[in-house]
Image (cartoon, rainbow, N blue to C red; front, side, top):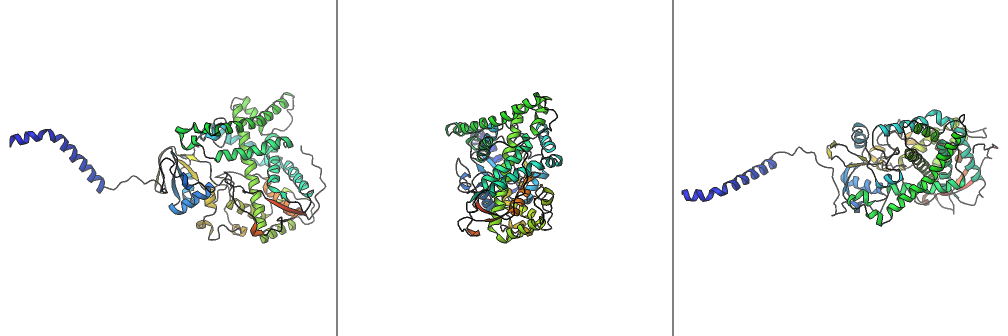
Length: 504
């Protein structure tokens, strides 16, 4: 007996460890796990994760489809990176308002790091004092009511140039409104930034760059999805393309900055400051670098030109697809302008139905369908799900704007009347309607330009096309623009005003 016990003694430590393991297992089986679950995910594949679920159609559409299957929060693994997709008003409010301090940071995306000199711009710079400083400068010097009013003549002249260009086109010749909108918005934005419109040659350089930069910022990158394989971006030519875009932008921004420095050195101190003058003055005080100034200028050109021109494209597209809506909008404009030879900004401010048209266009065709990604600083909970620290969070504004839960069964119908008497606006307080993100703004020339086009011209589709035949397919890029350019026929209805264009 003693010998038997002695023989078992060496096994006692192993038996003890086995008992402890079994006890822990039994405890874990019968005690509830208080750790909140991760958001649901679709079925993944080794290495690539869920990439196969978001290819083949615009990303915001693919993510809306996943949300329909899995709920308002979906965890999508893009290679080695976790992305939480937000597709409900409640979740968006949680991320953008309630826990905004935790989700204030932006991921340092590969394209943004190259194009914006290491993310020293407004859109991608890390949350902190520097970012707040840049935001304050832009809000004070670019978006203030004083600045908007001071540029009224520049907006009117840019629009008049477009109207004259359209009126000189033979009625049977289709007009590429997509190009026209890019040019006129570029003129308006350049007036705000550099105090004058760009020459034709400069526009020919800038406008294609704006499109290419936006496409690059939304395009797949190995450095973003597979950080350990970032060298592949060199092999595929992605790194070369991004550096080329930055160099091309630098030619433009260097020219702008040098021109302003020469103006200042020449003693033109009595001329009213534009945004570049202000940025250079702040730089001289030691609060900004030259790279920061270049990055901010790029931000305004890229963000302002494309979003506003895309909104105009879709507004005209929807009006052409919906003749009754076009008729009502034109009747409002023409009644308000009866007896007047010119549409002025104060007149456009009273066009309530036209405002509804713009409002609905922004809901259905958000210029920023996926808001700029955010990163959680700390592990948190949203709608009862765990969001691990370091996870990227993307709000699908496009999906929110088309969700029948908030907009009814006819959510995707173009019916501006639905906004009549509604307090919902695009300033970020209503999280089912955030076409620019919370608090973003639209170029003030959009409503005025649309009013002019409806006042002076009657519009038709080319080639005897019917309204329902107009292609409304979205591009695969990051701004949900039209896949095909918008060509329309214009028939002058009212003679253009005989006004000199003095702004240069």
